[in-house]
Length: 236
Ligand SMILES: C[S@@+](CC[C@H](N)C(=O)[O-])C[C@H]1O[C@@H](n2cnc3c(N)ncnc32)[C@H](O)[C@@H]1O
Image 1: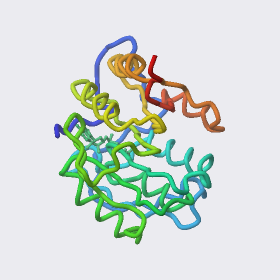
Image 2 (image 1 turned 180 degrees about the vertical axis):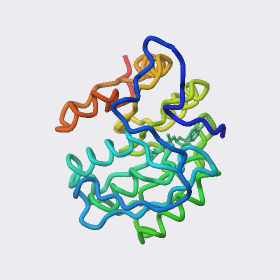
Image 3 (image 1 turned 120 degrees about the vertical axis):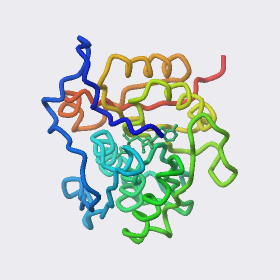
Image 4 (image 1 turned 90 degrees about the vertical axis):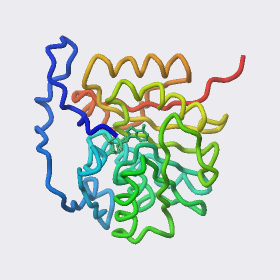
């Protein structure tokens, strides 16, 4: 995929979001991070970061927000749920959920485009989570392979809104995946006016509700990060 870094826009758009609240991101060398999500994980995740295959090779702010939300508010209500992460990059959110929430017996599927597959696999192995997490290729807008649950109960998506040509593809994949009982926790950082177009498309296609039980919300909203629940529309 095109190596376009979220936050790298440099326009004079009046709605362009200032990055001043967020430290500027350097393109990092490949390396490893320990992430405990402010102590929510007793044993921090060890995450390999490597940008050579695309922007998913490092951690993004909405992924941190969504992970913390899941660890705080869904620590014990995910047992027996099928769970899938879209645009997982190195697998931050899915691995956090696998590590800190009660889950199973189905594995959590962390998915992304093919170039991210080795990084997802490496991070599963680094955290010894192969018994709980599977990596899979899911390219938005393409048909979903038979190994992936057709209508997962829980879909996780963080920082997947940043490249306008991919919006209809992501909508199409959400349409394929969202069954009547699926709930997608969708977190993104609004960086450009165009990102609001994704929200418009999503509201047309699905039931989109802002999540309001996150104690951190006031803080991250100041950085233009928002957390939504996306569900299929009821018929009729
Ligand atoms: C900004 S990164 C976010 C990574 C991770 N969710 C996080 O929060 O740290 C966006 C991810 O979306 C993935 N992505 C972009 N276009 C995609 C597509 N068409 N199909 C599947 N994944 C895609 C990228 O490969 C990348 O890993």
